Length: 131
Ligand SMILES: Nc1ncnc2c1ncn2[C@@H]1O[C@H](COP(=O)(O)OP(=O)(O)OP(=O)(O)O)[C@@H](O)[C@H]1O
Ligand SMILES: [Mg+2]
Image 1: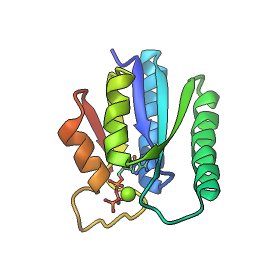
Image 2: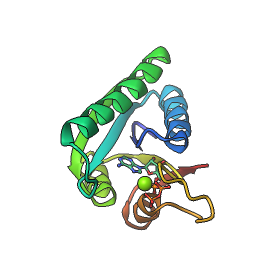
Image 3: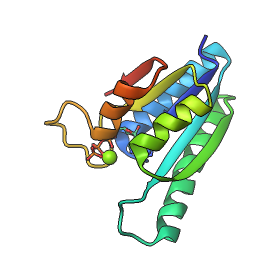
């Protein structure tokens, strides 16, 4: 049922919990993970640094998954996180998206972060929100 499991990750604690649940699901359903990190075009920061950070975050996910025998397709994109994650979910025809309620900013007084909110609104696949 959950063959292609997308986990958008920004390397935050919340995303790490989403990654762990995605790995468990993939292991149970014999699925694979599409791990996506979007370099936010709005961040005023040297591109190389952000790219290295993204690669590290995806590598870390792959290593964790490999220990459980789960394969990760690593996708690194530059653009608008919410918009590009939605496009990617459609392009990869994912069966489920596993995402944290919050991310790097982590303002817990808000019910949801903006990326999580946009994904719930616009992704066709089921979404598993991890808190
Ligand atoms: N740049 C990104 N690339 C991939 N996944 C992301 C990215 N940003 C957020 N996510 C995913 O979305 C989840 C929710 O993060 P979100 O960005 O919505 O919350 P926030 O950082 O607390 O608030 P905001 O960004 O709205 O100020 C994260 O746990 C992660 O799974
Ligand atoms: Mg964020």
